[in-house]
Amino acid sequence: MRAALMEAVDRLQVVDDVELSDPRVGEVRVRIEHCGVCHSDLHFLDGSLPTALPAILGHEAAGVVEALGPGVTDLAEGDRVILTLRPPCGRCYWCVRGELSICPANASLAGTLADGDTRLRQGGRTVYRAGT
Image 1 (cartoon, rainbow, N blue to C red):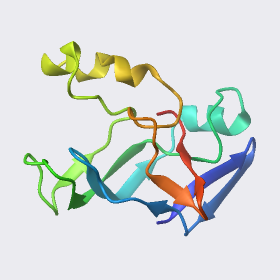
Image 2 (image 1 turned 90 degrees about the vertical axis):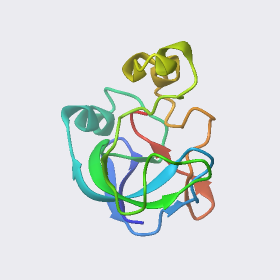
Image 3 (image 1 turned 90 degrees about the horizontal axis):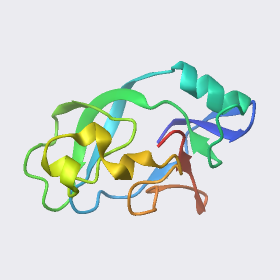
């Protein structure tokens, strides 16, 4: 997939060879159609907001579901969706109550999903998500 990849502070390049693994249980893969650049992306790029590297910038996005992981029943391929900066776990007290924005799994800026993986690779190395 194509991505704006930050290799180091003040070093951003567009690359076409980032690999995204198949969705796991409860996950979907989204083809990004629109992605905004916000001020936090600029903070990552200038180093004032640290992030694991290399990292994909751009966390305000919308797109189309192109693959479903096992157990996904509330979306279908072709559905249009918007993405959240940090996905909720879906299982904690707050998620069960519908308070997704205060899920404790959202508190990390490690650049990974809740299980510690990123699902992203480039030439065998892990690629992180800035701000997630």
